[in-house]
Every structure is written in C-alpha cells, then in structure tokens.
Length: 509
Image (cartoon, rainbow, N blue to C red; front, side, top):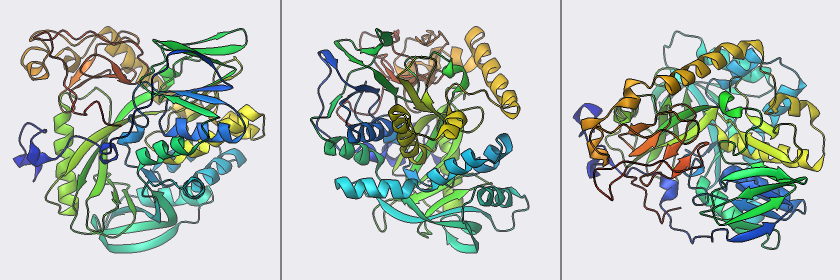
C-alpha cells in the first residue's frame, strides 16, 4: 500500500502491527528487587549492553547484580534492526574528519570489525538460539549517482584498515540497480533472544537479574555505590550504567548526548539479494532479511531528533513511501521505532564517568549499538580489571574534551534544547483536538518531563509522551520508558482511566 492511500490511523490492521518482531515471544518474568543486597558490581540496565557486561564480569570472577526497570531487552535492544556490522553508513568519513588517524582510532576500528566474530564465539560457547548468521555487508548508491559520498566512505574505510571490496554494479539488490562496496563476514540476529539467552546461560551463583526494578538514585557512600529502587537497594564497589542514558551524571553527559528516533518497517521486497544493505544517499535506507527464506525484510530510515516533528505518523508514511518506491513491495507487516543517543564527535562514551572510582558509563552509539556494545563491554571490563588500552580510554572517555570540529554541533544542539526548555515549540504545546484521541483532556498541554522540566510532546503514531530535550519517553500511565527521567509524569486525562495508549502489551518482553 502506498503512503498516499494509507489510512490516517496507522494502527489499522491493514497497515501491520506497531511492534518490533523481537518482542513477539513471551518470556517468564524475573522478580523485582525486594530488600538490600550486596555484590561486587551492580549493572543498571538489562539490555544488550547490560547482558554483555554481565558476561564479561562474571567470567572474570565477579558477583554481579543487574537492575532493569522494565523487561530484559525490551527497550532499545528490543527495537533494534539487529545488524552487526562495521559498515555504519557514512559514519567513518565523519569520524576521521573529527579525529586524528592514529593508533587509538585504528584499534577502535579493528575492534568494531571483529564484533561479528565476537558474537559468534559467545553464541557458540553458550548455545544461544537467536537466529545468528554471518552474511556480507554492502554500502551502496544508485546507478548513475553523481555525488562522491560512496567514494568518500570507501576512502575512509580503507584509511582505518578495512579490506573492503568494490562489488561494482549490482542489479538485484533490494533497492534495484546500485553500485556497491562489499565487506564479508558481517552478522545479524534476534537481539532480544540473544540478550535474554545470554542472561539465562550465565552462572546463577555469579549473577542475579531483577526486572521491574527502576533505579531511582545511584549514590556513593563509604567507597561503595548504592543503587536504590522503590523496594530495595544494591551496594557494590563497581557500578556500570548500561541504561542508554546515565542514572548519575557527574560530567553532564546529558548535554553531550542527543536523542534520536530511528524508524523501521517490515515488508516483502520483490528483489532479494542476501546481505546487509545500507544506502549512503537517496532515501538513506538500510535493509536486512529475516530468518524466513521468503519472509519479510526489515528496512529502516528517517532518523529524526526525538519529539521534534509535528506528527510522527507523517514520518512513517514517508518511510513507507520510500521503501515501497525503492523495493516495489506492496505491504508492511510491522512498523516501529527505536531510540539511541549520538555524541558530538561520532564516538561513544565508554569508561569511567567523573572523578569517582568505580562508576562507568557505556552509551552514545549513534544507532549502531549492536556492533559497539560488545566491544564497549570488553573495554569497560578491561578497565575495571586494570588492564591496558590507555589510548582507547582517552579516545572514548565520557570525560573527554571534544575537538574543535565537534563544537558547532554541540553548541547548536544545546541552544535548541535550551530553547525548548524556555520556549516550548508549537508541537510541544499542541492540545485540544490533537490530544483528544490520545485520551488526554482536550485543551490540556502535555506534562513537563520529570528530568529537567521540558514540555513533552504527544507522539501520535506510537501513543507515548516524548521529551525533545534529552530523550525521555513516557508510557500511558506516566512511567518512564527510555531516557534520563526516573520519575513518573502526571497525565491529565479525559476520564479517570484514560491516558496515553501504548500498544505493546505489558506481558511482552
């Protein structure tokens, strides 16, 4: 169905299911934390990063407790397109423009290139069933394109030591005729099945995982960190924030993390040339197959700063139109979005946060968390153990000073955030008829975010409240789903039970 024929209600059955395919399996719930516990390390967040850090630390003999405010891998991990590749569209061109091409950057690139093999080894070791397989990765542009984007990224990839191949013209890509670069040995999987399976496989005498256990505060006392939830606490000398956004923020990371939404749709393309495909121009789409031989493919695109568009339904319509035009598909079986944070200089924040010993943060993956997560987990575990890689610590440190080339973007993002805090945009202030379908009382502005007080915005496509300042998202009952907010918002509804509807059933992962 083309976007111009699409019903206004994106939730109509003919337009597919508003949910990621990784969340379709029901899993047994883990208990919530109740009481006071101690461990060698506490990890905040049970997504992909949390599972990988837990595997690293338990493997090095530490007793670990993981606290998750929702379900294991139900957040960003559960909404990823789950591609494992060092080919990150045009990111490497930007990175080598902002950073000197030195040994540290070479090592970072080499570790990213090794990510598929690192996952392969873990999956084999623990026998995790997650649909993992290796396949080629492609960067491509349309035949006849006149810009130099693909050539520029090829130069950047070769400069960081990747042996990428010129695949020449390819006629049967999901996007039709393209010119492509190819890198063998990339990977894909079911990211939720992997993270949940990894937690299940780790030794019970070393690991405890608690769901529905949102960390409200993370404070240091007597040389130890205490993570407090509503019904208990965990104290440990080591605390790792693997929660997308920092729980404790001694270096004002929230001012250097920009929240972006990435949109995806599952559909059946007419052309099926196996591999991970990423356009570097045109519609800027990415594509990957699912496990089924003639099953749907997953396409993503239309990256936008969270909560800044008048109506997210228009973003999905545009994505549907682009995918249908590029792939000649005629359906969409699922559609969803995921959130991630970008940094001013294109590299994630990985390592000790602030001057206090024992506090670590991993985040700012810029939409490529599958690859960067496994590398970052290893680096943080090495740092905790006091091992080398000093040059990488400086390159990725959450406390690093950003180079001059990153400052224009840094200033722009923070000026826009300050403007939204003091002067809410028309999209943030929208009320009356626009809010009535959401269950909010007509004429009532959306509530202010409990992080720093920005006015939230109603997401009409996914029925949530989104904060455009620092990326917090709230569900129908006002509870925070993503981002730095830790406290509920109060939703003034048109009756005692109405709120902002969330289509994902509470018993899903």
